[in-house]
Length: 320
Image 1: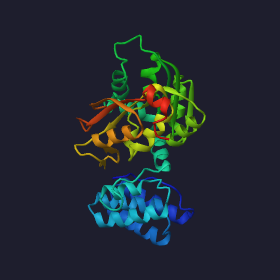
Image 2 (image 1 turned 30 degrees about the vertical axis):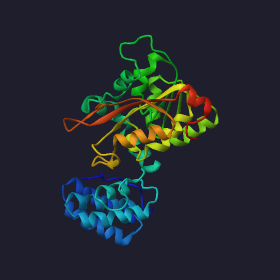
Image 3 (image 1 turned 120 degrees about the horizontal axis):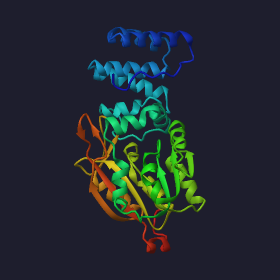
Image 4 (image 1 turned 60 degrees about the horizontal axis):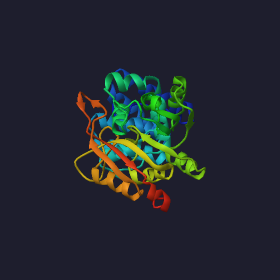
């Protein structure tokens, strides 16, 4: 069932009980029965975002596009923080903003849920190799003399990129919005510093503190960001002179940004180039590279390396 049944209490024991009854129907494969229960539940508790979202997911599964849109609109209206991702589901169905920004609440929830099985899912089921691709892009593969003074791992997750880059880095910092992911990363003992924070907020705080990094890395993180320009500009602010920003994105044949059925963003080459240029960075490399497979097929992607030249650092031409 698209979106999956999640639960945030309505605050009313009766409404919550009805919702759990609907989940039992779903578990038995009785989607029509679950729909009837949820429809009655939201009549009784019209601000119950969880029930509205589940109702939309079932209707979508049953092919009722109009009904799914109506339910997800109610879920969106009942929950401005969009814990369940109703705005993304609406965008997927062509209703409302086509490329809405993901809320911090949604991303936090998404990755907290995935933390326990994250490494196994990526490496064993999805053939994930983002860190290796990025290491090769910045000159690491086959170059044991590579030294990176300080590196910031954006959206570090459980530390897969940290493991790949640690042998080449003197000072390694990781930041992620998910506390559960940071807990997993901390257990590996790879990072000199770890923080739970929103990427943009963390970068801005680092810039205000005059922190500088020789490499800022974002491995399969920006697929959850609709517009690359703000985060690229913020990354540029914390780059040391001649420092590099290296990242991967999923891509598509067009120029702009597309929300895919996976609820991840695909960025066209023109959008990537514009974001790099607007941040005052020099594009050193942009090439096609797939960091994962999905349903047995390689996912189209780009690996990007951009640099702050010494001249731009001296004149302050990077975006603030």
